Length: 268
Image (cartoon, rainbow, N blue to C red):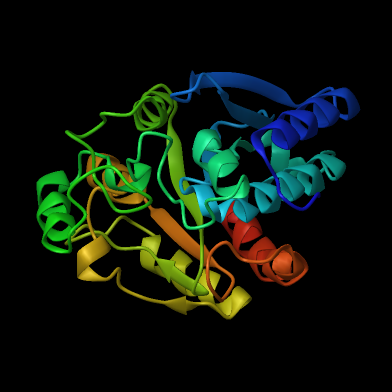
């Protein structure tokens, strides 16, 4: 995977995998504010559906490269009987405009191109998220933490909700950076199997199980998925340091993230 994993390099990677592995499928499930495609790649033909997404935040683009490498590893081992039982959905870049803007010079940029933090734009405690963010001064579009004018004000978050609604995900994982932490709870929801799986993730990766800080505990995709479906949803905070994490961390992040993603595939 190349350093500076832009939306163009993602498209190149998608096209390369499709040429190499005929059993992979791709759909464009939406478009960004600037019209860039939002890709969903699928592998497998089983009834149990699992979704992994990456790069809700622009300067966390390394997670897109991590997810695409994982998908390629899965494709290389497609003969495994596992793929007759599950279908894996990989949504590698939720925020392509923000990724390109961050790589292009605004390394502090988490938001989409309109200055809305996509992972604070979902209708799960959005009013509480607004209260927290406004209280910290994030009252208008900017690099981070602005929740938008209303829930689902952005095409990217709308597309994520719509794609989730037309599928039947048993669980979802959202890859973020950084902190080497795993978030698995939302308010009082306790989806069946979620705690057990979270502990397994921590065991195989060395990451810590943590509660989301109160100022960030609402209006995320994971919050919405758990509260809507009462099924396991996880945020995996990959790597350590200051975003954007240097690509020199890629191998270490992948080594620790790979077993988490494999455990997710084996979840029953």
